[in-house]
Image (cartoon, rainbow, N blue to C red; front, side, top):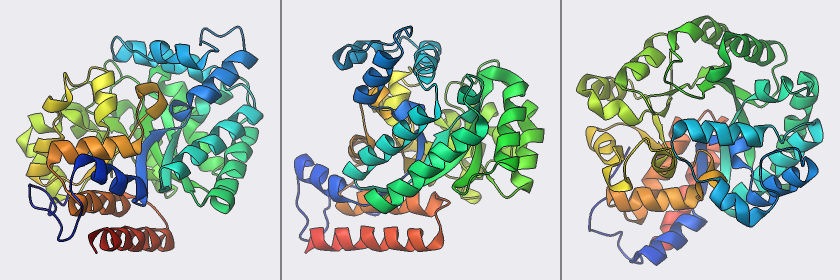
Length: 357
């Protein structure tokens, strides 16, 4: 990550103070690279879906969801997450959820997002794969035309569901490939789910032109990140929280410009880190790793991308120029079309220039 704006010095003419920086972040055009489809369901939408499906354990009261979304540990988070997945039961639910996510992104001035979608979790619950694809694509087109938000998909293997889920996710990605699909991922628990077993599926997806973006090193050590790099040919790493435990790994990430998708509040909520003050993002940045900031499952963690940028700015000592550099790094690390990338970078530069004048 570029930290040229870090430290106590400020951009000439820039406003000072955390409140003003929050305003700068709110107006900054942003890209998000690590955010989950179902995990982005707002309390309003989750409550609405829960009311439609009263057999679910998920509260139908938006206020009660705050307590429901308090996690004891990562395993409990997965349990709660899957209970929300169970609320998505037909193509209409999928379309509604996807479009509403884009609406929330537009409010934060997120102009481009690579949404991690886990189609297997829906198809195994009876939603036909073709209907699922049609629903997300219809929402993607509407989000672009009506909200100015460009969505792209990462199809994600739910690791806890084993190789059957990998086979089916790979089949859907390669044979039913929707227009917005750009990458192939692996999520869910890391403990007891070795990365190398998924190599054949990543090999096939890569051969079909998809990018490799597995989760690794969130709740396990650096060896999981190495496995993602060597066996899955990862181009970006989801989380990578434990990377700082291995100096050789940090050097490798820097040398090969492999970005980390860092999600500070998520790591705190799932107990992957003990406190934000201890978050390794500072050490990552000091080592020269290309860091991107993301929200992961924002409503579940009581956050959004603007809040995560604020946290990163505080931890890294960034002023407006440093925050803008962070936003540029996300665009650089993205798989956005060239025109979208150019427009985003120009928008970031224009926002900083107007702020500094």
